[in-house]
Length: 128
Image (tube, rainbow, N blue to C red):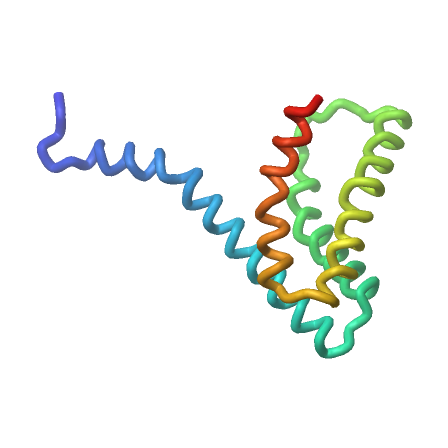
C-alpha cells in the first residue's frame, strides 16, 4: 500500500541517486588533485617527491581499512609478485608520466585528458 507522504519514494530515490552522487564526488576529488598538483609544481616542488608524498598519504588512508580482521585467504608469492608488477607498471608509471606532463600544461588540459581516458580505453578495446 503506497504511503501518501511519499517517504518510501524518497528513500528509493535516494538509493537510486547514490552512484551519481559518488561519481560527482570522485570527480571533485580529481579536480582538487589536478589544481593542487599544478600549484605545487608552479611553486617549484619536485615531481618525484610529490608523487612519493601522494602515494604515502594514500597508503596511510587505506591502512585502517586493511587492518580489519576478516577471514582472508593467504596470498601466494606468485600472486604478490603479479600484484607488485601490475602496480608498478600500471599506476606508478602512469602517475609519473601524468605529473611530468602537467608541468608543461594547465590543470584544465590534464583534467580533460584524464576524463577522455574511458573513451580511449573503450575505443582501443573495441579494436581488439
